[in-house]
Image (cartoon, rainbow, N blue to C red):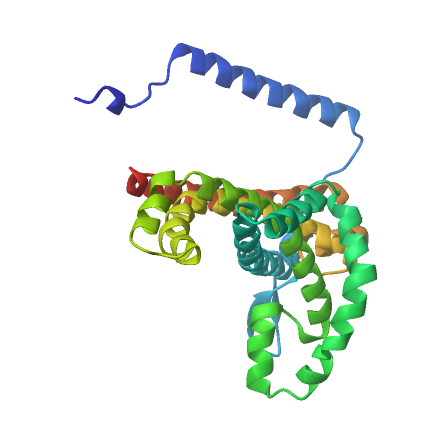
Length: 296
């Protein structure tokens, strides 16, 4: 039998730690309940998940589910755009030429050393507000066919809010690209130098070596951490509520104000974030194990 194949056992120390954790949670709950003078009422929450549409004759998503869909939608798009930008920046960071390496370094250090909220405001009010109107997206959507409009709304959300959506998408992508660039750079540097020498020995150019030899091996190494970056993106997407994008946190804030049930709404919203992030963590954990087997 292989020495490392034994299943972990649940020992007495684990029981003590678990019991201490349960006791700590119970004590905190008791203290909060005794100090906080508050009447809990969760009855309003289910109505904001789904509602019955009499015109359509069936149940449809309500505000919280719509917000969750928008959160997942903007996170997926931001990951796609940030992965493309981050890969380019990561390659630039490992370039032997000074100018690409300097541009990649300046971008990464600039983004990583600015807090997300100031960056979001600066980008939205000084850059996005000038560029997005020039694209005439609203005019193009007004002339689009119903089928085209349906596809656009499925991919990007309501047509009347698509400009805000794109602003938030670009902001999140630019912030996340800096971190993905470092992940890609580490993956490229992890490829043995012998791979470069082998490519040179058969007459491949530097671009061909990077494209056909280095990047395929680097991508295998960086897929698990980039997948983990997606979880960070889901949580960071709550920042775009500051520019009125109707994702989960924005709609939860409106519900909490209208119902005057701040604790219930935000606790349930936190549970929704935890559920989707933990589900992604489990899925990416399996992906990491599969990728690890291929790298052995």
